[in-house]
Length: 279
Length: 321
Image 1 (tube, rainbow over the protein chains, first blue to last red):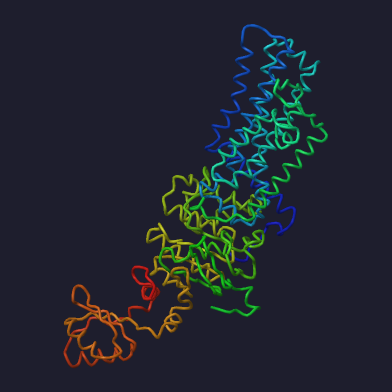
Image 2 (image 1 turned 90 degrees about the horizontal axis):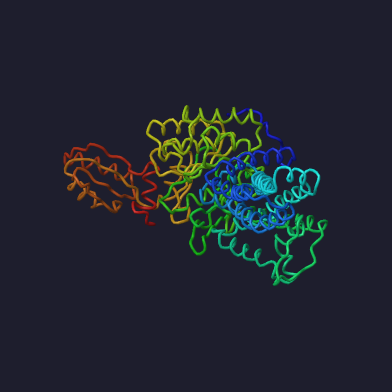
C-alpha cells in the first residue's frame, strides 16, 4: 500500500471541494430518491396530481378563469403548505437525523471533508431531489387542472394566454418553497431528535400567517411565497392585510434567509460529536 | 511514551493531559500519552475508556480538557487529518442499500479520489481484508465477520499512515483473525501507527509493540510489556506451579517472607503464588524439589503477557487494584 501517488486534489483547493460535493450529492440523491423513506415522498407528490386528475375527469367542463382560481387555492393551501412542507420535513429533516438514527453518520465525519462542505452537499442533494419531485408534481397537477376546461381551452390558455407564465411562477414558488423549508428542516433535524413537534409548530405558524400582524407575517416562508403567486387569493374576512413584498425584495430576501439558516446548520455540523447512544 | 520533545510530535500520537466527561460521568481523565509508530494496544475492561480515547483521537468526540495531536495534525481539521488517518469504529452499522464494493467506492469518492482510482483502491482493500466475492453483495446481508472486514477495508482503503482500530477482531473466526493479524503486522512493518483495542488479549499480545492499560478512565500502565512489568515491580509477581502435593508446597512457600499469597488450583494439582522475589521463589522451588521429592510439572510466570498484566492490574471483575 505504500509508495503510491495520492491522486486527490490538494487540501483546500476548489477542485477537491467541488469533487467532494459532487460525490456527496451522488450518495445522498440516491439515498433520498431510492431509499427506504422514499415511498412517503412519492405518495405525497402524487396526491395533488391524483386530485387534479379526478377534477379533470369530472364530466362537466369548467370555465378557465375559475379553474385558475381553484388551482391557486389548491396550490397555496395543499401543495405548498402540506405536500412540499411535509416532503421537506421528511427529506431534509432526515439528512443528518436519519443517519444518526441509523448510526452511519460517522463514515462522513471520518472522511477528509470539511463539515460545512458536508452540510452543503447534503442540503444540495435534498434540494435537487425535492425540486425534481415537486416540480413534476406542480407541472402535472397544473396541466391536469387546465384540462378540466377541455383540451382546446387548456391549450389556448397555456400557449396564447397567461397559462405558461402562471406555470412558470408556480414552478418558481415550488423551488423557493423547497429551498426555504429545506433550509429550516435541515437545521431542525440537526438540533432536535424528533423533528415532528417543531414541524407541527411551524406548520401552525404558516397556517395562521394570514391572521398575523404585518411584522410577524414576515417571519415565515409562506408570506414571501404568497407575494410571488400568479393568482392572488382573497384571504378571508379575518385576514390582516399587509403590503405584499415585491418580488425583487422577496426572492433575494428569501435567499438571504436561507443562507443564514444554512450557515447556522454548518456551524452545528462543525461542532457535532458522535454519541449515538445519547441521540 | 510520555513527554515527547517538540520535534518528535510530528511522528507521534500525542494526548496532552486529555480529559473527557459525559456530563458528570468520567470518560477518560488526564491522559498523557505519546504513541510511537508500530502497534499499540489499548487494553481494559468494558467502560474503561478505550473507545472514548479512540473517538477523541479521531475527532468524533472533543476533549473536555487537553489536546490531541496525531502526527502534529489537529483532528478538528478533517480535510488534512483524514487523508492520513483511518478509523475502524465499534459501530456495527452502515449506510443503507450499499454493497460492500459500492460503499467503499462511494466514500473514496467523498475522499476526493477520481472514480477510476476509487475503484482500484476499493478493490485493493477488499482483497487485503479477504472479502472476495461478498463485496458485490449488499452489506445488509453480511455476517458479523463480513461486516467487520468491510469496516476494516473502509479504514485502510485510502492508505492511511495512522490506523485506529476499535475491537477489529470481533466476530472473526480463528482463520480470519490470523489473516487480519498478519495484515496488521504488514501494515505496521510499513511504518504505520496502529492503535488497536481488543479484549482478545492473547492475540493483541502476539502483535503489540506497546500496551496501554486503561481502567475506569485512567491510564494505569503504558509501555512495552516488560516496561509495564518494571513500572509495577513493587507489586508481587504471580507464578504458576503445577505439581503433585500442591498443599505441601504451598505450606513450605508461605514460610518465606517474599511469598505474599498462595492460591490452590481447584483440582489441587497446582498453585498460583504471588511473590515479591521471583528469582528467590525459583531457587526456593529447587530446594523444595530436592528436599521433598515433589514432582513438578511446570513453573511458569503467570504475568509475562498482556493478559496477565491486565488481569493483574484491573482484576478479573474489572475492579481497580
